[in-house]
Image (cartoon, rainbow, N blue to C red; front, side, top):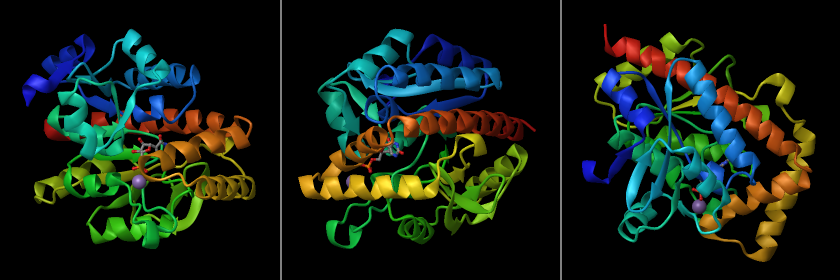
Length: 306
Ligand code: PSU
Ligand code: MN
């Protein structure tokens, strides 16, 4: 297994020095945002993490290796590539064995982070139960991964392209706690409120770290969703975004978009239909999550060394 892992010099040094490390996904770069904002954002998010006292490790699959920490040229390669595959649990072995270029989703990033001994992972939004899943069976593999892999995932909730209520039900069934930061409400990515509450509000990194350590010390395997609302000044109006999401969903349906193409299609349409405004919100919330994730990694690290 170690043979597949390739650490960047920065991440290798952090591991040797016992510094806290924060994982970042790469599907958000290849399939979640347009070039060049994707690469620019990836760099800025990494810097937010460094400035907060942790070390960023963006994860991708390159030349048969799980790269943990990417060089600038590798970020650029992923951000520009037309052939980067979106890699979830199902796709991981194929992409490594065939030495293809792979961008990791939340699920695959959690797997790779756990292999690399990284406990905290920052992203924008997680996948979930799609609207209409009762007939399509479209439920993101991210949720099963949260049920089984010990990584805390900091996100801004889930987009209302999904059925948020069913997503929370699914997580409950599988024993995945959903924590909120700074408010009781579970956020809906572009907006601060989804109309649903998280399970537990834990505002400080020390509280979050204590909760996560306790879970894992009890042998309760699986992840934790740490949901952090988009900053007020960057949030979108819910009536505006709701209409756009409804239109994007109708278009996906009309074109018969299926399977792993659904989420990237919806993300791209939302960006176009908002004239790029959703992208600004997306960038702001990822950076805000990076701050929460870095503080959590530092607190978990301190908790491990008392
Ligand atoms: N939701 C977002 N932005 C994203 C994704 C989801 O708001 O970039 C990406 C993540 O990589 C997530 C994946 O893990 O899409 C989920 O895809 P699917 O629904 O096919 O499981
Ligand atoms: Mn799906």
